[in-house]
Length: 83
Image (tube, rainbow, N blue to C red; front, side):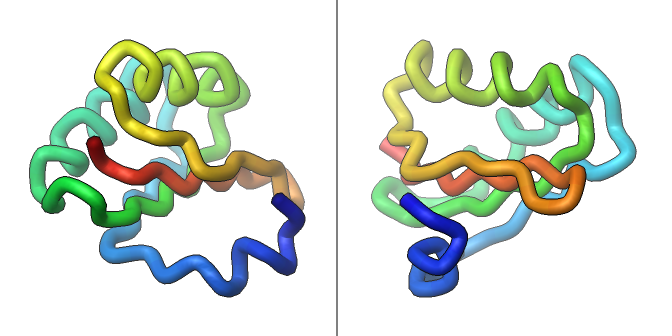
């Protein structure tokens, strides 16, 4: 999926984890994903490079779909669909 494709994805919720370091982004993600309904889309913005490993693992472990992940000007952007 390209950056242009992501513009057409509607996020039902956004988690801003910029400036936070491991384990905070994943802890916040765990709490935020509880707040949305199954099938809804969550956009996560983070600056910690460890999220490139941690967020895909989080999704695999809990069964959520990682729709897209990319880096845009030092910000890691993830699109997750709640299981």
